[in-house]
Amino acid sequence: MQRQRSLLVLILVLVIAAITVIVRFPIALGLDLQGGSQLTIQVKPSEEVKQITERELEAVQTVIENRVNGLGVSEPVVQTVGQDQILVQLPGVSDPEQAERVLGGTAQLDFRRENFETAALLNVRQKELSQLLLKQQELEQKGDTTAIAANQEQLQAKEKQIAELAESLFEPTGLTGKNLRNADAIPTQIGNNWSVGIEFDPRGGELFAELTKELAGTGRRLGIFLDDELISAPSVSSEFRQTGITGGRAEITGTFTAQSANELALQLRGGALPVPVEIVENRTVGATLGRDSIQRSIYAGVGGLILVLIFMVLYYRLPGLIADLALVIYALLTWATFALLGVTLTLPGIAGFILSIGMAVDANVLIFERTREELQTGKSLYRSVESGFYRAFSSILDGNVTTVIACAALFWLGAGLVRGFALTLGLGVAVSMFTAITCSRTFMLLAISFPALRKPELFCPNLPVSKKAEGAL
View (cartoon, rainbow, N blue to C red):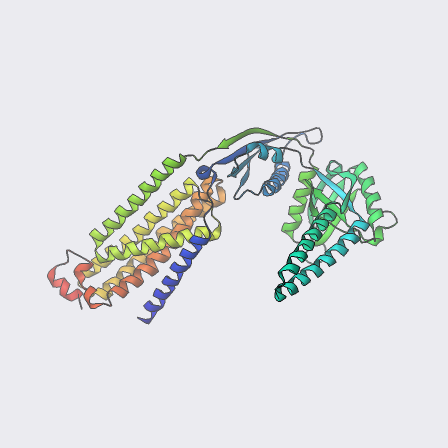
């Protein structure tokens, strides 16, 4: 009994945590539920790149993803379509022209030198800002509102100065992405570090040699910008002070992992690609079903769920009531899991969730039928409940494991909405295993601990009178 009480406390804590998560972290809706913009981007070959391969498409996709992040859209979808197109879905974006302006241009990669005087001035301003922040803390402790307001104005002015200096910290050099031929992540010979190798055309090699000669050993950095965003700022070693880095090849070193080195190489290749892109389709997507249809679907789902709950009580009596309670807990835990994992809910995702509810009901039906069979053989109520869960467990486990395997395959190999369906169904099945085995079992054993509820007919209405007496033992 002590174990059942511990499990009951655990379930109560999980329910409270789930309700808190649901209230504090609303689930994001997909394009089909809240509408938005959908763009199809055609990647075109050029004189330098005669054919669009998977390598070029991947690099352009990386650039597009960076630009989408700049739009501040939550849960966007950026994926390749066919051999030379990229599909972009932006939930909640009602201005497709703005998205087209941001996503439709060729990536702009350029190399800039750090301005020494600006860097020194920026350093001074940052120190002044730190002093003002310390002063602000002291004033807040003293509670001097007038002085706090005056210091706050100075803080804002200082932050504005720093932002202006940061914008002019790097100067253009004329070395751009069109001079870059290739970029690759390469492992270093020492340890497990990685670096990024870059290769320029002849003109780019000359400009790069001059630039690195000027920066070598000075402490000034070489800023690498993609679409005016700083993506890396390496320094040049003093050993290249005489000639700069010649030969048109260089290696960006640092504390790169294989993943971060590959990401930087992808960004560089994306900015180096002289391949034009064109928006071939730009349309505003409304909620697929419309608000009224979604409401009707919700009513139908809630109505169906209520009918299932009523059926379980009428047919299975007390176990049915316990199953209903377990189903409510299942719904809370699953919804909270979606919110915690940042699942974007789409129509296929809702279908996966509802299907997992059906599987949770199936698990309880299996358990209760096995329990009835045990009661009809004359076993006591306690042993019938224990045997019911034990005998049904293997069937429930087999059914759920095969479903999870199918969901994993769909998620791994599928794309877009198919992955959403697989994710919600897989998570729902995993949670239903917990609620069917843990919650239902705990509530059943807790119920039969009360003498008033320890009646076999509450678990099996058609039980013969002779078996009722045996079951009540």
